[in-house]
Figure 1: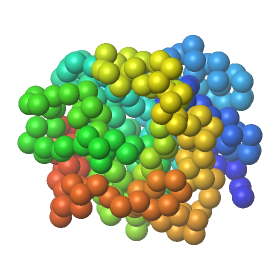
Figure 2: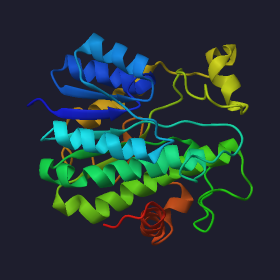
Figure 3: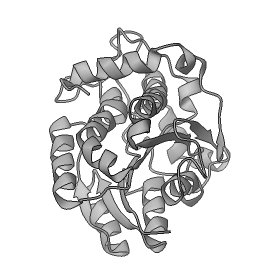
Figure 4: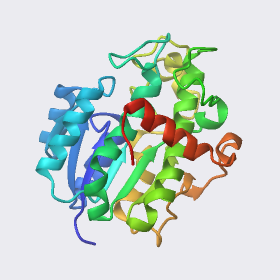
Length: 277
Protein backbone atom coordinates (compact mmCIF):
# COMPACT_ATOMS: atom_id res chain seq x y z
CA UNK A 1 0.00 0.00 0.00
CA UNK A 2 1.22 3.51 -0.81
CA UNK A 3 2.51 5.65 2.03
CA UNK A 4 -0.07 7.99 3.52
CA UNK A 5 0.20 11.34 5.26
CA UNK A 6 -1.36 10.79 8.69
CA UNK A 7 -2.12 13.61 11.15
CA UNK A 8 -2.61 12.35 14.71
CA UNK A 9 -3.74 14.68 17.48
CA UNK A 10 -3.01 13.69 21.05
CA UNK A 11 0.01 11.92 19.57
CA UNK A 12 2.58 12.68 22.24
CA UNK A 13 1.30 10.05 24.68
CA UNK A 14 -0.89 6.96 25.05
CA UNK A 15 -2.54 5.34 22.05
CA UNK A 16 -1.74 8.35 19.85
CA UNK A 17 1.98 7.88 20.42
CA UNK A 18 1.72 4.11 19.98
CA UNK A 19 -0.15 4.54 16.69
CA UNK A 20 2.34 7.16 15.52
CA UNK A 21 5.28 4.82 16.14
CA UNK A 22 3.68 1.86 14.36
CA UNK A 23 2.37 3.81 11.37
CA UNK A 24 5.76 5.46 10.95
CA UNK A 25 7.42 2.03 11.11
CA UNK A 26 5.08 0.91 8.31
CA UNK A 27 6.37 3.69 6.09
CA UNK A 28 3.66 6.31 6.48
CA UNK A 29 4.41 10.01 6.94
CA UNK A 30 3.10 10.73 10.44
CA UNK A 31 2.50 14.28 11.65
CA UNK A 32 2.66 14.47 15.42
CA UNK A 33 0.26 16.91 17.08
CA UNK A 34 0.39 17.31 20.84
CA UNK A 35 -0.28 19.75 23.64
CA UNK A 36 3.12 19.34 25.31
CA UNK A 37 5.98 20.72 23.19
CA UNK A 38 8.49 18.61 25.12
CA UNK A 39 6.66 15.29 24.72
CA UNK A 40 5.69 15.97 21.11
CA UNK A 41 9.26 16.92 20.18
CA UNK A 42 10.64 13.79 21.84
CA UNK A 43 8.32 11.53 19.87
CA UNK A 44 8.91 13.43 16.65
CA UNK A 45 12.65 13.04 17.03
CA UNK A 46 12.33 9.34 17.87
CA UNK A 47 10.33 8.49 14.73
CA UNK A 48 11.60 11.22 12.42
CA UNK A 49 8.25 12.98 12.18
CA UNK A 50 7.32 16.67 11.96
CA UNK A 51 5.72 18.12 15.08
CA UNK A 52 2.98 20.67 15.69
CA UNK A 53 1.63 21.77 19.05
CA UNK A 54 -1.76 23.09 20.10
CA UNK A 55 -3.79 23.25 23.28
CA UNK A 56 -7.39 22.43 22.39
CA UNK A 57 -8.61 24.47 25.36
CA UNK A 58 -7.75 27.52 23.21
CA UNK A 59 -9.52 27.59 19.84
CA UNK A 60 -7.12 30.21 18.51
CA UNK A 61 -4.43 27.52 18.75
CA UNK A 62 -6.66 25.10 16.85
CA UNK A 63 -7.07 27.66 14.07
CA UNK A 64 -3.30 28.24 14.00
CA UNK A 65 -2.71 24.50 13.84
CA UNK A 66 -5.09 24.12 10.91
CA UNK A 67 -3.36 26.95 9.04
CA UNK A 68 0.05 25.32 9.62
CA UNK A 69 -1.16 21.94 8.39
CA UNK A 70 -2.77 23.40 5.28
CA UNK A 71 0.36 25.40 4.46
CA UNK A 72 2.75 22.49 4.91
CA UNK A 73 0.95 19.36 3.68
CA UNK A 74 -0.62 19.35 0.20
CA UNK A 75 -2.21 15.97 0.93
CA UNK A 76 -3.73 14.72 4.21
CA UNK A 77 -4.82 11.12 3.79
CA UNK A 78 -5.79 10.51 7.42
CA UNK A 79 -6.87 12.81 10.23
CA UNK A 80 -7.02 11.04 13.60
CA UNK A 81 -8.93 13.19 16.09
CA UNK A 82 -7.47 11.47 19.12
CA UNK A 83 -6.77 14.31 21.58
CA UNK A 84 -9.06 14.55 24.58
CA UNK A 85 -9.35 14.25 28.32
CA UNK A 86 -11.43 14.20 31.44
CA UNK A 87 -11.24 17.04 33.93
CA UNK A 88 -12.55 17.79 37.38
CA UNK A 89 -14.81 20.62 38.39
CA UNK A 90 -16.66 22.59 35.74
CA UNK A 91 -14.22 24.99 34.08
CA UNK A 92 -14.65 27.54 31.30
CA UNK A 93 -12.03 27.91 28.60
CA UNK A 94 -10.73 31.23 27.28
CA UNK A 95 -13.37 30.82 24.57
CA UNK A 96 -16.18 30.61 27.12
CA UNK A 97 -17.09 26.94 26.67
CA UNK A 98 -17.10 24.14 29.22
CA UNK A 99 -13.63 22.65 28.98
CA UNK A 100 -14.48 18.98 28.38
CA UNK A 101 -17.01 19.88 25.70
CA UNK A 102 -14.51 22.13 23.94
CA UNK A 103 -11.42 19.92 24.14
CA UNK A 104 -13.19 16.67 23.25
CA UNK A 105 -15.80 17.87 20.76
CA UNK A 106 -15.69 21.48 19.62
CA UNK A 107 -11.93 21.60 18.97
CA UNK A 108 -11.77 18.47 16.76
CA UNK A 109 -15.01 19.57 15.09
CA UNK A 110 -13.38 22.92 14.26
CA UNK A 111 -10.11 21.36 13.15
CA UNK A 112 -11.92 18.98 10.82
CA UNK A 113 -14.00 21.85 9.44
CA UNK A 114 -10.91 23.97 8.73
CA UNK A 115 -9.09 21.06 7.10
CA UNK A 116 -12.13 19.83 5.19
CA UNK A 117 -11.20 21.20 1.73
CA UNK A 118 -7.86 19.38 1.95
CA UNK A 119 -9.51 16.25 3.36
CA UNK A 120 -12.01 16.19 0.49
CA UNK A 121 -9.27 16.66 -2.10
CA UNK A 122 -7.31 13.84 -0.49
CA UNK A 123 -10.34 11.53 -0.13
CA UNK A 124 -9.28 11.24 3.47
CA UNK A 125 -10.15 8.99 6.37
CA UNK A 126 -11.23 10.81 9.55
CA UNK A 127 -10.86 8.72 12.72
CA UNK A 128 -12.53 9.87 15.93
CA UNK A 129 -11.44 8.29 19.22
CA UNK A 130 -14.59 7.78 21.26
CA UNK A 131 -15.18 5.63 24.36
CA UNK A 132 -17.59 3.18 25.95
CA UNK A 133 -18.17 6.06 28.37
CA UNK A 134 -20.60 7.37 25.73
CA UNK A 135 -22.98 4.60 26.71
CA UNK A 136 -22.15 4.54 30.43
CA UNK A 137 -22.29 8.25 31.25
CA UNK A 138 -23.33 10.18 28.15
CA UNK A 139 -26.42 12.36 28.60
CA UNK A 140 -26.72 14.84 25.74
CA UNK A 141 -28.89 17.93 26.21
CA UNK A 142 -28.82 20.01 23.03
CA UNK A 143 -30.14 23.00 24.97
CA UNK A 144 -27.30 22.75 27.51
CA UNK A 145 -24.18 21.72 25.60
CA UNK A 146 -22.05 23.71 28.03
CA UNK A 147 -23.36 21.60 30.92
CA UNK A 148 -24.49 24.44 33.13
CA UNK A 149 -26.87 22.03 34.89
CA UNK A 150 -26.17 18.71 36.59
CA UNK A 151 -22.43 18.81 35.89
CA UNK A 152 -20.16 15.95 36.79
CA UNK A 153 -16.78 15.05 35.32
CA UNK A 154 -18.09 11.63 34.28
CA UNK A 155 -21.18 13.03 32.56
CA UNK A 156 -19.12 15.69 30.77
CA UNK A 157 -16.66 13.09 29.49
CA UNK A 158 -19.27 10.51 28.52
CA UNK A 159 -21.36 13.11 26.74
CA UNK A 160 -18.35 14.39 24.79
CA UNK A 161 -17.57 10.82 23.69
CA UNK A 162 -21.18 10.46 22.56
CA UNK A 163 -20.73 13.69 20.61
CA UNK A 164 -17.68 12.13 18.90
CA UNK A 165 -19.88 9.31 17.63
CA UNK A 166 -22.62 11.68 16.48
CA UNK A 167 -20.01 13.85 14.73
CA UNK A 168 -18.75 10.77 12.89
CA UNK A 169 -22.25 9.81 11.75
CA UNK A 170 -23.06 13.29 10.48
CA UNK A 171 -19.65 13.88 8.88
CA UNK A 172 -20.15 10.69 6.89
CA UNK A 173 -23.73 11.61 5.97
CA UNK A 174 -22.79 15.07 4.74
CA UNK A 175 -19.46 14.39 3.05
CA UNK A 176 -19.15 10.65 2.49
CA UNK A 177 -20.31 10.91 -1.11
CA UNK A 178 -17.69 13.63 -1.69
CA UNK A 179 -14.78 11.51 -0.53
CA UNK A 180 -14.44 11.60 3.25
CA UNK A 181 -14.63 8.31 5.16
CA UNK A 182 -15.37 8.82 8.87
CA UNK A 183 -15.23 6.25 11.66
CA UNK A 184 -15.35 6.23 15.47
CA UNK A 185 -14.03 3.64 17.88
CA UNK A 186 -13.58 2.68 21.52
CA UNK A 187 -9.91 1.77 22.13
CA UNK A 188 -10.54 -0.15 25.35
CA UNK A 189 -9.59 0.94 28.85
CA UNK A 190 -5.98 1.85 28.26
CA UNK A 191 -3.25 2.29 30.86
CA UNK A 192 -2.05 5.79 29.96
CA UNK A 193 -1.68 9.25 31.51
CA UNK A 194 -5.41 9.75 30.85
CA UNK A 195 -7.16 11.76 33.60
CA UNK A 196 -3.86 13.17 34.88
CA UNK A 197 -5.42 16.65 34.76
CA UNK A 198 -8.57 15.51 36.52
CA UNK A 199 -9.62 15.87 40.13
CA UNK A 200 -12.40 13.31 39.63
CA UNK A 201 -12.39 9.86 41.19
CA UNK A 202 -11.66 8.39 37.75
CA UNK A 203 -8.09 9.59 38.21
CA UNK A 204 -7.66 6.95 40.93
CA UNK A 205 -8.34 4.16 38.44
CA UNK A 206 -5.65 5.36 36.03
CA UNK A 207 -2.97 6.53 38.46
CA UNK A 208 -3.04 4.04 41.34
CA UNK A 209 -2.53 0.26 41.54
CA UNK A 210 -6.27 -0.11 40.83
CA UNK A 211 -5.39 -0.14 37.13
CA UNK A 212 -3.71 -3.53 37.57
CA UNK A 213 -6.97 -4.98 38.87
CA UNK A 214 -9.24 -3.45 36.24
CA UNK A 215 -7.98 -5.25 33.15
CA UNK A 216 -6.42 -2.21 31.54
CA UNK A 217 -4.71 -2.78 28.20
CA UNK A 218 -1.41 -1.29 27.11
CA UNK A 219 -1.33 1.65 24.64
CA UNK A 220 -0.03 -0.59 21.84
CA UNK A 221 -3.13 -2.75 22.13
CA UNK A 222 -5.44 0.23 22.43
CA UNK A 223 -3.94 1.73 19.27
CA UNK A 224 -4.62 -1.31 17.07
CA UNK A 225 -7.95 -0.12 15.72
CA UNK A 226 -6.64 3.37 14.99
CA UNK A 227 -3.74 1.81 13.08
CA UNK A 228 -6.14 -0.50 11.22
CA UNK A 229 -8.40 2.34 10.11
CA UNK A 230 -5.42 4.45 9.01
CA UNK A 231 -3.59 1.66 7.21
CA UNK A 232 -6.46 0.05 5.28
CA UNK A 233 -9.05 0.94 2.67
CA UNK A 234 -12.41 2.28 3.89
CA UNK A 235 -15.38 0.49 2.42
CA UNK A 236 -13.27 -2.65 1.98
CA UNK A 237 -11.70 -3.30 5.39
CA UNK A 238 -14.22 -1.36 7.48
CA UNK A 239 -17.51 0.49 7.12
CA UNK A 240 -17.47 4.31 7.06
CA UNK A 241 -19.93 6.04 9.36
CA UNK A 242 -19.80 3.25 11.93
CA UNK A 243 -18.71 2.97 15.56
CA UNK A 244 -16.30 0.13 16.34
CA UNK A 245 -15.42 -1.76 19.51
CA UNK A 246 -12.79 -4.55 19.43
CA UNK A 247 -12.61 -4.37 15.67
CA UNK A 248 -16.33 -4.89 15.12
CA UNK A 249 -19.24 -2.56 14.49
CA UNK A 250 -20.90 -1.88 17.83
CA UNK A 251 -24.48 -1.00 18.67
CA UNK A 252 -24.85 2.75 19.04
CA UNK A 253 -25.81 4.16 22.43
CA UNK A 254 -29.61 4.64 22.53
CA UNK A 255 -29.39 8.45 22.46
CA UNK A 256 -27.27 8.30 19.28
CA UNK A 257 -30.15 6.57 17.47
CA UNK A 258 -32.63 9.42 17.87
CA UNK A 259 -33.70 10.82 14.48
CA UNK A 260 -31.86 14.01 13.52
CA UNK A 261 -29.85 14.18 16.76
CA UNK A 262 -26.51 14.08 14.90
CA UNK A 263 -27.64 16.79 12.49
CA UNK A 264 -28.90 18.99 15.32
CA UNK A 265 -25.62 18.66 17.23
CA UNK A 266 -23.69 19.55 14.06
CA UNK A 267 -25.77 22.68 13.44
CA UNK A 268 -25.51 23.85 17.04
CA UNK A 269 -21.77 23.24 17.07
CA UNK A 270 -21.39 25.34 13.92
CA UNK A 271 -23.46 28.13 15.46
CA UNK A 272 -21.35 28.14 18.63
CA UNK A 273 -18.16 28.36 16.57
CA UNK A 274 -19.54 30.90 14.11
CA UNK A 275 -18.89 28.67 11.08
CA UNK A 276 -21.02 27.10 8.38
CA UNK A 277 -20.79 24.13 6.04
